[in-house]
Length: 453
Image 1 (tube, rainbow, N blue to C red):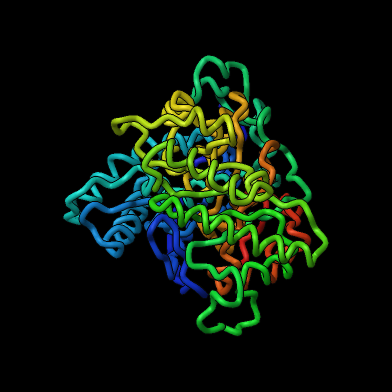
Image 2: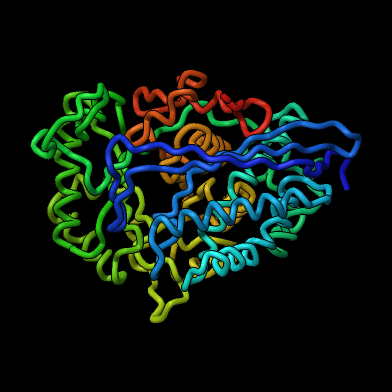
């Protein structure tokens, strides 16, 4: 064991609530507010030194938990109750270790705590592991943050053999023997990264799409956002259940974007397409690719990747493969990815990319990022409309993974009030210039930034 190891002394958790500026539609669901779970973790070293770390994450129940019979209010309440039960469990843990190891130990009780929560809540359905990962993620962030602060360093620079007790084979199997995360993670963040701007299902593209303007000082149409922030990366939410409508939406986005980019004198920009699991088959994706290329060849050529087109349960029969679509563009696993086994299964089904999310837990994101690089898969980082500290965590993750080219950040569109305190402290992270944010500032002790509380 290492002298640098830590153990947990105290855990605290509390929530914040923010209304959205405008509703966001994805996967047939509409979200208009957010509850953020904040966690502080006090830790101590083997020689008695102590520090406090901080973690924060939006409780995205509308994304993490597709209910069978429960209401949205019930799933959110269950996730928050899970967090309270987990806090009690984590607070009793006496083991010393690196945060990677402590988080793996903690994760072994997620299923049990989730089942206990569902039973006590009287829910007639299982508590999804994805929802458990989201509710647990700020605990993981707080432990990594506390570890970095204790050692006065960016925690992403503390992932090698000098700090971690076991190599990656303990988590990812024999092919990773002798390897540590420092092989796959940058010790310093990239100085700049392009920002992926979300084009939600309800978002206006042009003036005619706005029934009544908000007039709150922020852009309101896609074109206005492009001109204001110099955007070059656009993520388009599609329905997946109406081919002609999905094709038309893409074509309209390309038209609006081209008009704005022409005014900027810019000719290079890219798209991603997110169907949020709604496509019935690979054939739907292939036909959408064919028809968009027929309607707008230039726009289709700008497509960088396709995200999670079909149902999150990869084992559901009949299984849906993605080999043909992945030959055209990377097809990225997102909601389906909850552990290493689902990553391996996704590869068997033809998926060629991985979407990392800090909301699934930092230790899992780092491990999946390493595995994806080992397997030469396309990598991106997405943020679940994370505001404030949760966005900074997501951006820090993206900036420290070498093959991730851009970072998603859409709370500035939908929930800017939750960014206010943090934007004053890190203005170049919340202000977009030429489509980029300055991620190089995310190198402070801990997870890269200081709690603004």
